[in-house]
Image (cartoon, rainbow, N blue to C red; front, side, top):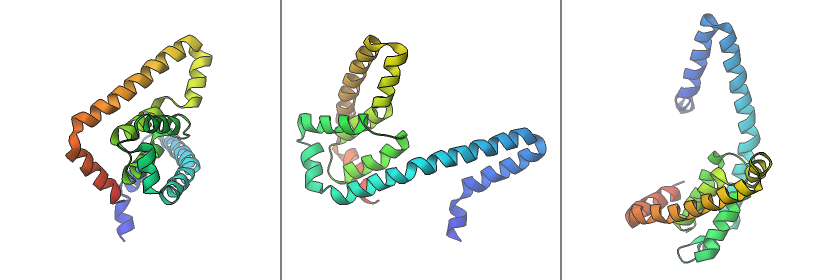
Length: 176
């Protein structure tokens, strides 16, 4: 019975589409097709992301994560965050569970933020697309500036947040 109440948005969406059937049949059909397409895309993306999360949670020991991305990881932590973010596949929604695992295992908050920023905008396929549409020179200059801004921004945010807020976020990550 609890499962039924957790799906409120699904029921609301179905009700809206049902009402649309009487108001504008074609719009209801378009909305249904769009919903099915989105569901199909998510089914293709979500399972591999969860497999990756599970493998990372089980196979990467806490000590290794602390060494690679922890408080004293320095350039190595930034590099690992950069590599994880740029070579990632899938939408940004897949990065948040990975970021949670990183925090849970002792990664530095600034490195996790940098990872999320890289995943969001500087993935290899996006860079290739930029080169073909905007040119190599523009792509190189804009991405270097972007990476530097992300790097500086992630450390500024970490400093502005303070230890207590970051500890609270890490504790939340550990609950899941």
